[in-house]
Image 1 (cartoon, helix red, strand yellow):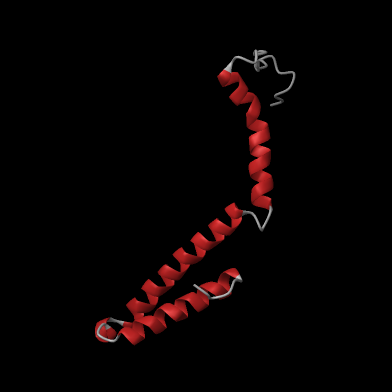
Image 2 (cartoon, rainbow, N blue to C red):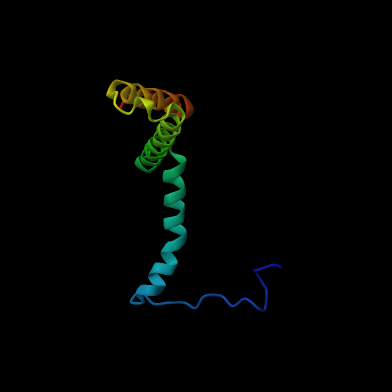
Length: 102
């Protein structure tokens, strides 16, 4: 179904500058373009934050899985726990291509 020239689709009415809602509607394309441009840039703060959040969640899931596989027999040995966290961080770093620094 063609949206342009379709008699079932009416164009948005012309709004004056005092119309706050109309102004917001007119800003949607500009805002969406800015969001798309920001996410396309690998060095943007949004992309860096998302990558870091994903890595932390992935690391925590790996840690939980590794601890489950090791079992409770090492619960009283904190050095084992630290080594499991280190291994989870290493794996997460390999997956997302970043370093394993915390």
